[in-house]
Amino acid sequence: MAPKETLTITDNRTGKTYEIPITHGAIRALDLRQIKVSEDDFGLMTYDPAFMNTAYCQSRITFIDGEKGILWYRGYPIEQLAEKSTYLETAYLLLHGELPTRSQYEEFVYIITHHTMVHENIRKFMDGFRYDAHPMGMLLGTVGALSTFYPEAKNIFDPKIREIQIHRLIAKIPTIAAFAYRHGIGMPYSYPDNDLSYTGNFLNMMFKMTELKYRPNPVLERALDVLFILHADHEQNCSTNAMRTVGSSHVDPYSAVAAAIAALYGPLHGGANEEVLKMLTQIGSKNRVPEFIKLVKAGESRLMGFGHRVYKSYDPRAKIIKKIADEVFEVTGRNPLLDIALELERIALEDDYFVTRKLYPNVDFYSGIIYQAMGFPVDMFPVLFAIARTVGWLAQWEEMLLDKEQKISRPRQIYIGPQKRDYVPIAARS
Image (tube, rainbow, N blue to C red; front, top):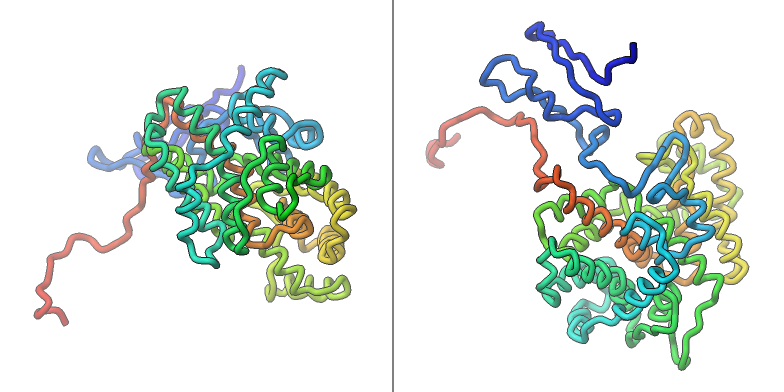
């Protein structure tokens, strides 16, 4: 007889037994509410700080197997997409569930390319930031402000209006990001060039100087495209959770994306590759790596760029980035921090201390070194992450909106504060 797809629970407080259905390897938390000590009991809840073992949605977008080091977008392995696809083709896949036909792809590229300009008042809005404003803060504020330029965006259940906002966000965020960079260095803004690719145009808006026509280096253009593919989505991470949670209130997508950007701004999320660069700079040379490893094992230093909440083997994205690093350095010259990183990885992967703890390089370990070699300042690293991740946020947002099981997010709590007590006038308080 085939085993039943159920979980049998015996409540030792009452002696009662309950049978809970198991679907897709999970039980529904609400099924636990029937487990009560008395009729006026609220019912059993689960306590799970930071969602360590709680699935709060069903999704068809991204699959991760952290034990095996697997990452798929809509079923396609990340290795195949990084090798054969483009960022905009991958974006189409994430949004629509299937790879586009040639005509669908060309139409999608055309639409995104012709939405890259921003309203001149946006440019003036950005001029209001201080000269030393962090570009991620500028991106956060400006994307939030876009909702005032497109008030129809609040009609989130109109498929056509929703599609237009998705196209606008994917197209305009690189423009806003590049403007934030130029603002910080006191350079005039470089406007979009519709003759260039998505990443080529971003490089144009970042680095164009006095030349009449900016032509990106094809190696760097492709490398950035691959990096954007690798960062396009990553299941239910902190910023995606923010996008879904804020979006569940049925706010417009610009406000929801601003919330996701805010979550990504944190050093534990989008700022991790900056921390890797700081660590490598602090180590200083290959010869000092063994000494640094000893400090890490003694608990006196932290090994940044190793380990991941999900991956318990080598992050598949890190393997791909490591390969494209050599191509980038042939153009830019070798970043001296790379030799320190390679030696650090070699020693750590041969040390039982790290191997038994399943600490392997993650996507942040090499990405910062490549970005730095390409000329991006450190404070632009989380902005680059945000550009790439925008399509993932939007795909997750739309999936959440169309999921009939989803309601406004409102987690439960376990109250451990004081019980009812009476107010004491201030003169009578000791």
